[in-house]
Length: 239
Ligand code: GLP
Image 1: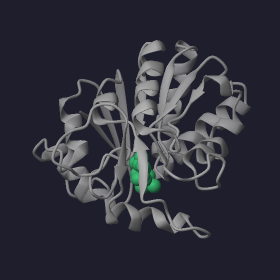
Image 2: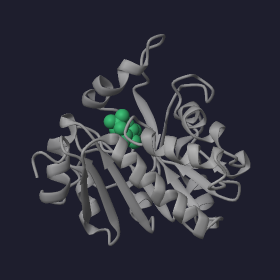
Image 3: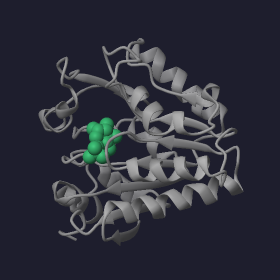
């Protein structure tokens, strides 16, 4: 794992955003795996701004996202699909036909098989962006007794419900989600993980220095050959 520590999230956004812009300019038809949550937003802002300024084009890029809530309409304001449209897709020239998303309302087994096939058909994910949950989850792979492989339907833990329910002001937060599995994430050629704030410090420490265990899903990243971890000083404070 390569670890870089920055003063704040804006600096991370600039660094990661530039990395994406350079990568897409060198590989215009690349396959990018995106993540939701607050952590990647400054990175998305940088990419969107670069696109608006004509410094990069996403029109030939294909994308897959990590996860989606179950039992929530795709166009609900809190769906992860809406999040990606608002924070990135609508601000770029991306071709929405090249945007693939897990369907939280489909049969989980069929959807898992469809997603695996779609990712393979594109030749795999070149760069997968990740955040990390306070309990060490990646995507929605919560602490458990075994590492998962392909996408699957997960029951969310109380830690995740506490962290994410602030976004749900009209309806109760869904209790389940469909998420790319650990295997699908690990098959990405490169992984960039962004973590900011003190609430992530313990999970970051366990991910980097702890035992590789499904109880800390992010710890599996120690076994990937190309992981870049971008932290602010607060998230890095226990290293
Ligand atoms: C959610 C998402 C994860 C994300 C995590 C951290 O649970 N499913 O993909 O990494 O939250 O989010 P944030 O960046 O808002 O802290």
